[in-house]
Image (cartoon, rainbow, N blue to C red; front, side, top):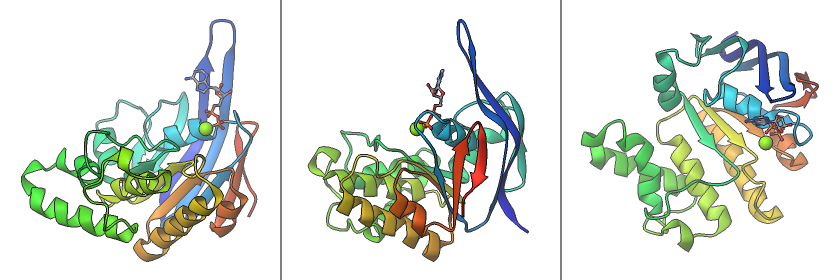
Length: 227
Ligand code: ADP
Ligand code: MG
């Protein structure tokens, strides 16, 4: 079996002044390439903590992570920056688009940072991605000229610009109305199916969870397979 991601016995504690919060306890997860996975769980159960660790944004106490067969046991690992840019794409509940840049520029930036000389091709690719998310008529709009759902589409296109193997989304439709959410859910499904990109999405939406291949619940520091 070709696992694109493996977590082995991950522990994570937040250290407080008086007490420590042991949020993830010997947590294990295996994700196959092309999987579409949802992670559910009560508020405060550790979903964002888990996604932050998978995304190499946050440190962990012990355990091992393998991304595309690269072992990561320390946050300081040399591979981390490269992996973060190349293998991982992020979508958050809040879009974090840069307000002074256009939709097109926002999508281009993560790629430009790495390869400024290739601006023309990056622009072509960014336009293709905006088209894919249904925004071919919004290239030059700035974030404040876009609706909530459109901003989230731009954020999704931006997450795709470096052809990540894994897309991590933390409550991507948490701020959107039902109908707009449904469109974004379908878009994620389309990306998973057409691009064969692995998607791990944290959500409270039953509807989104239902279109994923596997549902996990974060409970008492572990992941429980629901479906
Ligand atoms: P979820 O995303 O499932 O709602 P989080 O992963 O954000 O939960 O948080 C899990 C628990 O860890 C919460 O109780 C939260 O208060 C705590 N927590 C999150 N981040 C920190 C932090 N940086 N320092 C201390 N405690 C934190
Ligand atoms: Mg959260």
